[in-house]
Amino acid sequence: MKFFVDTADIAEIRDLAATGLLDGVTTNPSLVAKAGRNFVELVAEICDVVSGPVSAEVASTEFEPMLKEGRYLATIAPNVAVKVPLTPAGLKTCRILANEGTMVNVTLCFSAAQAILAAKAGAAFVSPFVGRLDDIGQNGLALIEEICTIYAAYPHFTTEVLVASVRNPTHVVESAKMGAHVATMPPSVIRQLFNHPLTDKGLSQFVADWAKTGQNILDQKIPTKSA
Image (cartoon, rainbow, N blue to C red; front, top):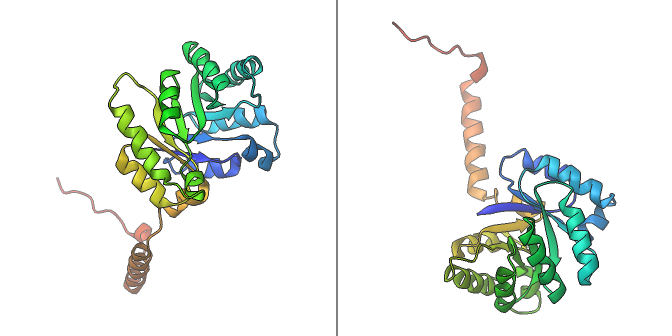
């Protein structure tokens, strides 16, 4: 499974990219507004930090201005994935951009039927929103399972399932078990994946036992091999 971070905070992106675990970035208008940066300049900077797909969302809802925005965003960098909503105008835009060789992330997916349409439109990614479905009493992970099952039945579908609105590590692990290709999550959730109390307990014990030896690894000479 690929890991994308869902943020427009360039400092967070740089920090996570340095771990080598980050495969891409997703942004949306809300995250950009929170960052308080010029949108295009910010996307360009993110694309310099991360070599994988960087989702940049259109602002228009009508077809012609949406297509113009999508084409413009695609010129920022080769790794831009233009993000469009799962609407008739969005899917029409998706088909044209995909035919032109642009990666497209179709967002705001809440049903398997919508995911089928995104795949038929040539989307590189479809973004089903797990957490938002959970919020209204539905089972977000059940949707991921349904989409993965459908896509697996049609090998000519090349659209990747990008699990979005991820709220916790369970969403990530269960989606991975279902075969989802990508999970995009806030920085806090990525960091939660590291955590386990037994890891912390074991490390504390190792540190304490090592301190008792009074040794320093870097002070020790590596033995030379005999001829």
